[in-house]
Image (cartoon, rainbow, N blue to C red; front, top):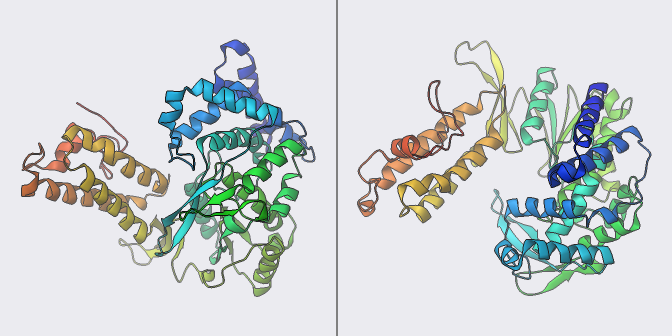
Length: 464
């Protein structure tokens, strides 16, 4: 962290400390606590934190943990309890009871409910859903330990980190391409979340955390039994590897473990630095970039991965020359295209890959079939989250090429909505016989994916 970054952190700490504690919001108290942890970890690289567990049950941390879990609003765990149930029971009562269990160390996580979700390639991947109580406990732990590891994480890591996104990774890729790093090795880790070795992860955690109570509660979450769809229970203490995708703390643990690889590749004066090779990583997806990537470099990478107890899927991993062929990363297609204005000029074209564009259209179509009978003023509130979420993911500052994909989405919405509401079966709808898309965007605040100057902003959500 450079001097200006250190000064910004100190200025924020000073600003928050000027407030009296009773005047601070729970969010401000959490922010102050996290900044102090971050600053300590950044300034003392070898410092080990040995008293953290008692912070998990602090009121302001528990409150913020619940709010963040509530914002995600995912489904119930094995106990069937929903957030609505918690609110009927009483949030304060719920948090007080959980806090007491944590303080007295009587807290025990319940089994994780496993569901299977479709993958783009037609397969399925497992998703583990803890109970709400377990999610809140995990979130409280994450809020406490994440700032410590944020001080250690490398700049090449972008996934599941505060104020970082896939767009940041893509910007970094474009910068490297413009510097002549055209040779790409796109690596695919086989079932990464399911294969993280618990013993080696614990060693990585102990680099910074020596509080045995924190290490123990993390082990409890890692060893929680899996409730399969057929009623069987698997895992438990017999499991020596894996962290459930869907667990609140799992992405942080995944980053902590792969930070070992980040440090190896990113080491100043190390082997990869001497070869001019850089890595860009988003969770378990990463690529190597250089002017030339030799076979020895790849063999070293495979050996490091193998020592970590992980496996690279050779069938899905490949080396490409980006000047000669396109490649996909994090849902983007990156291609060296010729300009339509001057065929001699070429540029790095970055846009949502075709499967992603198809998927958002399918999501809109499926939602429309469910809400077609809704009043006109309710349609935007159902469609906007799909449109906004997709656009927010693919919107990259200073890279305008994604606007082509946004225009295609705009055209699809216009065609689909107008056609849908002009069918005979929709006569009862207020939108029947009209230009439904124009009416919904103009009068009811449906997001316009593509707009020229003079039209209202993309993220407008205006209602009349």
